[in-house]
Image (cartoon, rainbow, N blue to C red; front, side):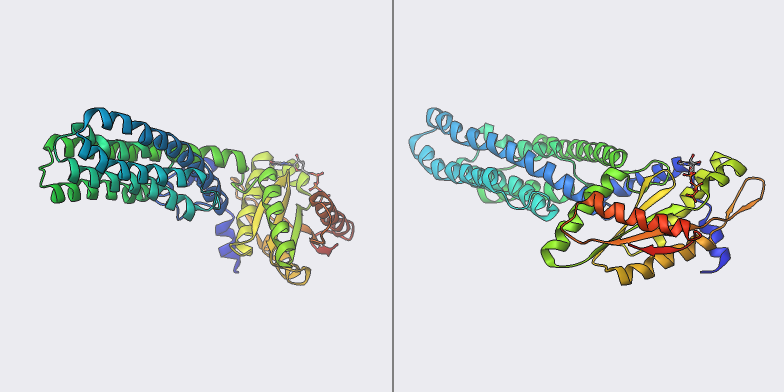
Length: 373
Ligand SMILES: Nc1nc2c(ncn2[C@@H]2O[C@H](COP(=O)(O)OP(=O)(O)OP(=O)(O)O)[C@@H](O)[C@H]2O)c(=O)[nH]1
């Protein structure tokens, strides 16, 4: 890495701009830029809401049979009973289907079923009842609007709305019944409002999730999120007999930077370091702010030997960093690193303590170096 590159990186984007960028439309459009943790937490929310809705629908589907019995000729009622029972069974399946609640794929399948089950019922009932039961015309509207309670991206919302439109067209084709124009217009309007509501929920969720898990100065994971992730990684490592290594990093003589150049320059140094550390690791690794001028890096599937290379890479890129003050002064800084490989059974605090002891040795041995626990 050349110095000019490093110097360019060392000018971090102002915090407010970064936060604005983090919340840009892209996050609401698709989940491409969402983190795995966020996907998992959104998936569990979807899972629980699908369960709640499916439980209500199951009861309504069964209860509605009484209304059918009162309002329909017996032959029609008898033809509707299997369809209603089938629908109620489908919803019951959704209520009791446990699956992996944190998998976004599973959540999407659950949502698709929540749309497909009533849509299939609507096509069947429209064909059977034709125009005689006006109330059934509202099925597609209800099916579309129910999705407003989910935090979904625009793409997810649009894909889920498709079967609703398709069911209306199919029902019209099969029954020969001309769909009233107002009904179609209402459906389009409701789908548009539903998409808006879904994205608003997603926006709220993304903002709250970021506030709860990110350090506002650097945008990195905060200590709480780091420990949650570390817990997941050590469980995975134990289960699949893999290694996990952590690096504890502390900027050297950082107090002097603050004292000499002021707190704002100190903040700028922390931000530059955060960017550089992230660039020095793989996508699957996690860099977080442990507190103050201390950072923690989690390296999944990495033993101490390979982690040492990563630690050296971070140390070198920090050494090469250059932060320029508003007065044009150049600030350089270094970092000391303590490295510890997970050795279950131990608890996370012990692992970090071993890394901290190694870090202490790195400090006492002269700083700007890596020590292994
Ligand atoms: N600018 C800024 N400074 C911070 C922040 N958090 C902690 N600090 C400062 O970081 C400094 C840490 O100083 P010390 O713990 O004495 O350590 P050090 O000067 O880095 O010395 P060694 O760790 O021994 O190399 C303190 O001056 C804190 O005020 C922050 O968010 N922004």
